[in-house]
Length: 434
Image (cartoon, rainbow, N blue to C red):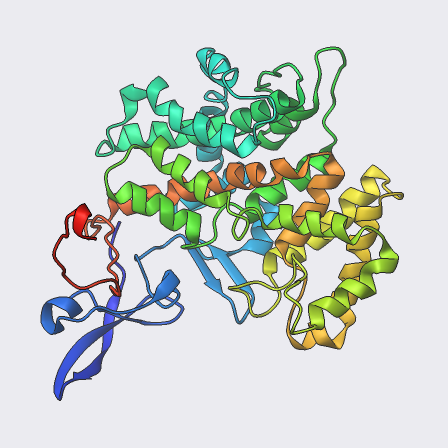
């Protein structure tokens, strides 16, 4: 990866009367960064930044977020344009390679992914080792990690061709693994990939078709699924992406790195947010109880908060939510869903959040998790599958970030430091004297 950062200024740090100069680097857009890599060497001090909220862990050319403007760019392209005009596989090519594909490149990439959708038949035996009531994320995490035992012939991360094959395999096999986890959890037989279908159509068929009946994919539903995948494909250096990069910095194989990302995504504060949102809607129960819960959300002394509103990064409207709002209403109209208490509650909450001064002034708008949870529920996915679908989409971002990291000649193994507050040095006391 060509280094594109440039020094634009210096910052002065004064410690005990001594002045140190630190380079300030700028990227193409966004905030500049103070380079503290040599801070400990020159001053004997570390920076202290819990959660790395003010720390750039890497240089990247993949995704840019401006939370104040509500902007999300993939390789410079606004997410709204990609969701409206692109496809998930075209967007995947963009994230990996940096440019939108030509027609020939798109056809070749699509064919390559399509040819890798099958799973090794022994993986069926692997699935049978899980309990029937296992969480689908547990199955996905374990199976992704196990792929390195099936494809150990292409694990040389220094070889570009082998990295490409691994990336293609992961993108292609994630829908098959995700659908297999779903089918296993509900006791239905495996539906094998259909390579005549698009990426999203194939996934829907593997999830919802049964051998006893013909299955025809609804194009509006397939388009909604594709949009959900595009919107979740990457999101800069979030917790799971940083986990993938950290694992990859040690030289771990790509399947292990993505399994680590899946495990991190499973957390309710990250990929489990849409599941938590739908559980909240179920807790509310009926539309007439909404005022009670809204009042609780406004009460500073009540720990309850409305899930699916506001965002840690976006201080304005989540740009992905704008796309999902339109998609949500199109899906509900297509499916003709009229008698659903959960969806009734969601639609009423949406009206309140967009009009109530309390929410508007604090910019607590519905986020992408709010709408995606509604859509996935309407499609028939149980809440336990929500994070699995998130992982499916995010795999593209993970492999893109992992590949970019390996191409960066300044990359080093991740080694965060700490501010130690434990006991100082002391001598061991034998057990009979304690």
